[in-house]
Length: 322
Image (tube, rainbow, N blue to C red; front, side, top):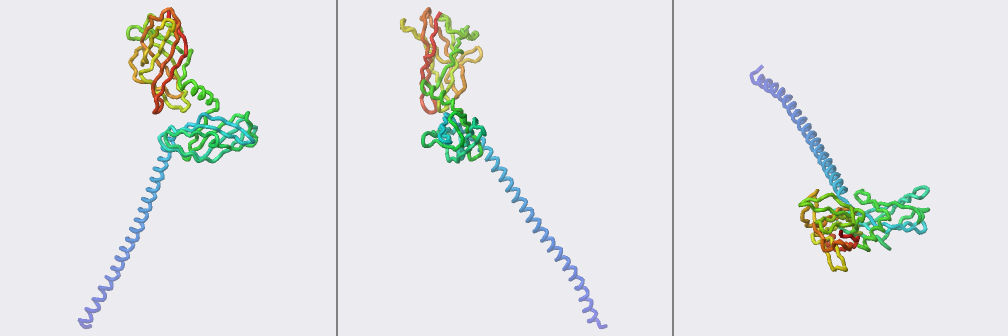
């Protein structure tokens, strides 16, 4: 064998082995790239699903927050029935901080032998603070076969966010109309009281209409806000309790005051929340000039209701000044 032939055979043998090794390396690299591509796609898909889940949870939490933030009041309800048609007159107020869309009304005939329900689609949008009076042609009608005017009805609205808004009983209309006729604030007569002032403290409450004229006293009355619009009333420091004896042309008054325990302090304002009886105090003062006489008692109230000024005089009782 010649030298040249031997080198040729040796060269082919060497590269033949290297070719097989190179193929193995290329295959390994290709498989690694395929595995990396698949892993990358799975990782990206997992991130995408996690992002979708996080977004869905965020949206659900926001919906829950929005749902809890709704505050719609339905009151002053009155039902009329004609040929199975139950018509409801009602006032809606958005007392919350976000807009509300009401989409449904349900009415339940509780006296019907089968206790029937019926509903009606609605489309009422209420912006924050808005009051909607559903009266006359605006009052919704629901058909309940067998309904009778003597039956008792319960109803509620449903918002687009899934909240239910119960409608107040029709008896509330009477209270609201009376309050609208005589004023939005009423007084609880049996709980009228006074306290004798001893130095800078108060004695025990005395529930009596016989007031010691020659002693310094603080008057206590329970007031309730019955405003038909269900707004809070702010009573200012200019409010007072006033006594008058017309034949003597004499009078006395007690300014509104803040009482904490046995102490009393000047008062800037007093909030009367809707429907919540509130004990309000006036004084200290005394009425020596009225001793031995019967006097007409009045509460002169001044303040605000919503963005409007509010004033009311409550001529509620007469007192004997001993």
